[in-house]
Image (tube, rainbow over all chains, first blue to last red; front, side):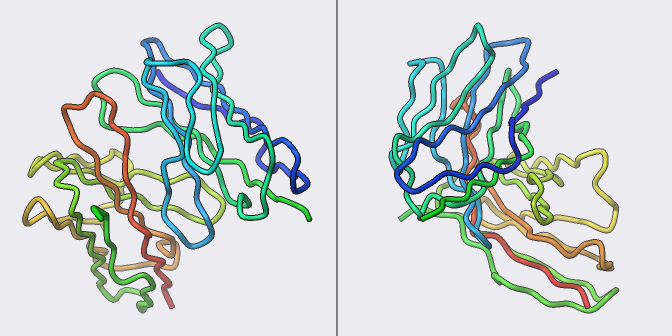
Length: 113
Length: 114
């Protein structure tokens, strides 16, 4: 069975600081992994995805994530936080021939001036 | 731009009064999903369509129904809304056959039950 764990339901950083949001997954088959961002009262927007082509994945808004099979992790990073990055971030996994995504519980990112 | 559209963005209904939320897409995707999302929680899948094939989640209450009259449109019907059904409802689409199943979301409809 697949699962996703996001460590830290709330993360707070200063503007200009490194953003690190953690995601660990469990999957018995090679996974596809996704990070989505959700701004207040909005839908979810795909930030980036891992599809086995490259372990370091670059996404929109300066975010990137690295797939580490040995650590079963797919952490999201951004070198320098901006106030506009304040949002909820969800990690999700899909494995096998399955239309469903398994979602993490989300991490709320606050960016302080 | 190709997109997923949800109407209305905000819906207020009375306890027990049926309500319908709509979703349309210009992506020509063959899979459409409905999610319920409550405050500070992950989205919860209610059901999805693969073309006209309806797939209900085991824990979706019977109070929730869906229709997909064509590829572009999908509706969520709540037959008798209760206070516990107040939530954000998200529609998403994906394309079967790409093997990746990334989902594209609409902006959501926030449902208030009074």
